Image 1 (cartoon, rainbow, N blue to C red):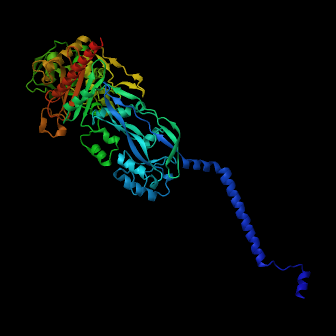
Image 2: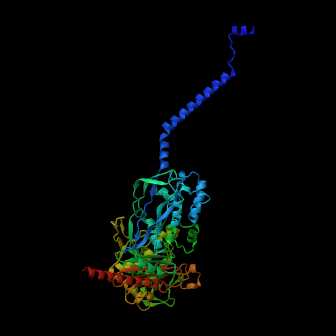
Image 3: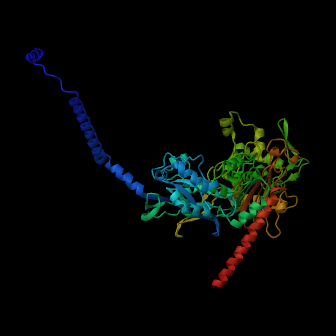
Amino acid sequence: MREGRSALLGLHDPAPPSQVRLGVLGLLILSVLLLLLLRIWRLQGIEGESFRTLSENNRLRLQRTPPLRGLISDRHGRVLVDNRPSFNVVLIPEAVPDLNVTLPILSTYLAEHALFTNNTLPRDPRRPPYQGVVLAKDVPRETLVTIEAHQREIPGASVEVASKRVYPSDGLAAHTLGYVGEVNVKEREKFPEYYLGDLIGKFGIEKSLEARLRGKGGGEQIEVDASGQRLRRLGQEEAQTGESLTLTIDMELQRQAEAAMHGKEGAIVVLGVQTGEVLAMVSQPAFDPNVFARGIRIAEWRALADDPLKPLNNRAVQGQYPPGSTFKVIMAAAALEKGVITPSTRFHCSGGLPFGRRVFHCWKRQGHGSLDLRQAIANSCDVYFYQIGQRLGIQGIADAARLFGMGKPLGIELNHEATGLIPDAAWKKRVLGAPWQAGETLSVVIGQGYVTATPLQMAVVAATVANGGTVYRPRLVKQSMSADGKTVKDYAPEVLHETHIHPDSLRMVRAGMTDVVNGRGGTGAKAKLPDIVVAGKTGTSQVISGTRGKGKVLARQYRDHAWFIAFAPAEAPEVAVACIIEHAGAGGGAVAAPTVRAVLDAYFNITRRDRATEAQAHVHVR
């Protein structure tokens, strides 16, 4: 009866549960198949190319060859900076199945050479995939053999040949040559063509002429097996060597000049009078650039950076000191040129000059008596030059000093050249917000007060007086050459400007400077040579006022600096020198003049020998 009613109402019995489950299962299988087909289509069609590329990269490697830097030699072709091959251990992280296994093995082989700790690789966010990470640098040959022998145990590791910068003369001319180091993140932002691990100049010629010294990197494409073992080379692009530089420096003279400065703090600059060529440049204390080339350690860097004597500063071009009485040669030339005195003008020195409410003293407290200009230069009489200062005025003093190249950079091929300071009334008003005082002029005229100069500037002053008034740009480079020995550029002498000071005025100054060394009572007698007439000028610059002549009674940092500038031979000048010895506690004639004498003696011994050799060679050729 119940069945009849169901049929009349049009109802059917529900499907058995087993059939429902089969239907759901069928739908699930169909969905999975559709997803698989969709994934296969995506892998083959959309992402296929990228996966093929990854597959190729697992088999192919691009090994980059860093650029080789050019050599640096002295004026006679003697090598000052060289390259030598070194071996680095490199790891490609993408080729390593498990870094936690591989790195501990490598650490046992590399020992103290490893650049990673705690099984953590050095990180570089800009490293492209499959570019090697340097794990150890400049490894010894026994380490190289060990790595090669255990290649199967350390997949992805290999040994690459690199170039190491070498300074074979153990720090000779360190401040001039400078040093290199690995390019850092900031430098790579500025120079995107550099890669992690590339060397870049950090200081000195290595930095200022980086564009010439640095070559162009190359590389080769190689095929490797699953463990990273090299199978064959597929292509190669040769690296290009940078230009080599021939400097104006004479290696032998540089060595002698550094020996003369041994144990002192200060600087020496030796210039060719008629060319502006830097024959030697010394800054003491110095450093060994090889420490930077191999990778300076943190403790070593801190020791140099925290050293109170600042060995990283190039005192020759960055040190700024009151020039003291060496400034008087400019003042003498200016006074003659302006006509405020004549060579025969005499002033009386009683040991001081009353001015306003004070007395401006001469270094010789008992006074020099009556002197003319030549005698005033020879005896370095302050009172005589106070009188000159009153007549020239601060603007006349400043104009003359700038005419000789002071108060501005001279353009030598080094970074961070200091300008020194030549003050005038406008400068004081602008910088200090105060008017110029007449008494300040008397301090400036004898090279004290606000005036400062670098040793390089004072060497240019000496050379300018010696050559008759031509200011040459000081030069460190004679020539640059390509890797195949062809000349790329010759660097000729460059005239910055002419002083246009009358020859008679400069002749009188040279006569006074000759008497400084050779005349009776001259302050620079300790610079005298037996067979060469030297002309010079002593100087003593106060670190703090009112301490002149107190010598070693004061703490070292308050003692006077000792100056001496010179040229020789006096009758036909070839070479000019400026020397400063910091905190010497004595005058330039006592301390700096003997140092310059040693340098000049070395120069003439070297040049005599070289000229004799050239003459002999010429005879043989004939």
